Image (cartoon, rainbow, N blue to C red; front, side):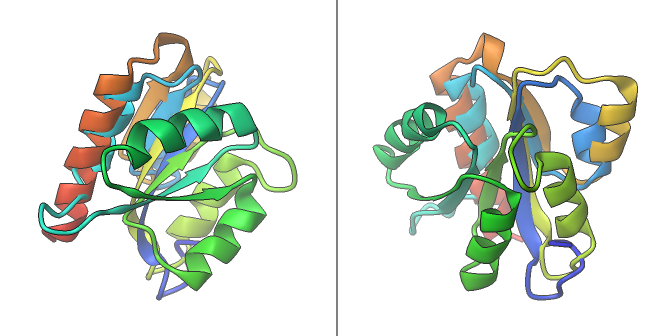
Length: 181
């Protein structure tokens, strides 16, 4: 649904989940994919692609676990990025409709609307489909899961191998790319 809305299709979505199914996230149009526990360095690296040097980027963290959101908020917020949060896919859609983020960090397993459904919604919306999505998950993704994410995510990161510096570098890279396109 996100990718189907013209005004939201350009928003990069990063999937954050416990399932390691990067291809599924990519198939769904996520700009990135992370597995839990989050590798901070990888997350930063993904998000860095969408940040403009002269202005802070906005990262939408879609994660049902408050502790995980806090960890990302502290890691990225201290680097100057504006952090917005949503506890599930439905709330993420509302947040995206209100203000387009530069990058989306996405968990896959959430109540109400999971990460797979959110990536599909982003891909269906022409205004949102180009928003970089990084999946951060602790799930061991199946080939089918990866296929579902294919084309919709930039990267899939494992929360089990979370390295904060890598996450920050990836976020910075994604933000740079998003702002330079």
